[in-house]
Image (cartoon, rainbow, N blue to C red; front, side, top):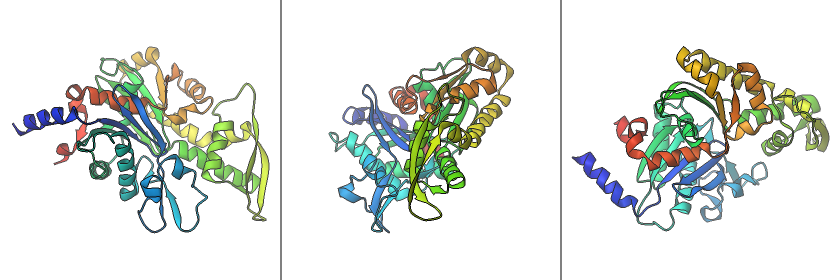
Length: 356
């Protein structure tokens, strides 16, 4: 009776609040509202006063404003990425970030808190789940549900995950790569790698140090990845000027770097992703393999925008591979679909009551 009463209350309150689907990512956080699509897409960065959890600019130094401060702050300010490897590393800062995003979307429903569906890595622990629940609730959510990222990505990419056929998703984010075979609305087999876009950036930083004696920051490494990065040979190779600090003279210096060099720098993280895909396929039943020969693999997440990553996976697996129509928003769109169909998908969503 209590559960029925709660469901009725949720339906009534839901008419006056804006329920949210959230892709809480290491690099970026996206918020999706049913019928409106993605309404917030911001870097997962918060700027605070050094030594405190007090957010700058009256709580608005979140997202792009804070990301622009990375590597450029005085001693009195810290720009923090509160999620590492897809999970919460700083509880209070994550709470502040979520509160800012929830209030930004729900500002016209101040008296009614929203229900929230949050996508999390498939390899998340019970303790890490609890941290997400608590952060979201303290940030103002009325009810919190968790869904595995590959399941949300598959639904957001338009795959028939409810059908008794195999759908394979590879979601390359900032902190994790989620690889899963889905069937009948559930995960059949999966691998969660803590190797993704951030590791590609770090590989570029290390390559510049080793081969050019130049230290570049994470934002510069990301720009190099975007402009030059590739996982497969390009028809026309690229070149750009990279600026950083000379490690010998400790003075500013620049160097011309080519896409061939950056491809060499990215070999290890790309190969780890390929190995994760092969490991997932090895654990998949033969009947599902037969489906995948036709259905292939769908790539989601910002990391799959790396040039030639789809070609590399296609070559290594022999399967059809395609990038989703809107790879950056697949997970967020999937969370919004779960919100629309909560009754249908209740059995595959985690909520706080499940852990009590």
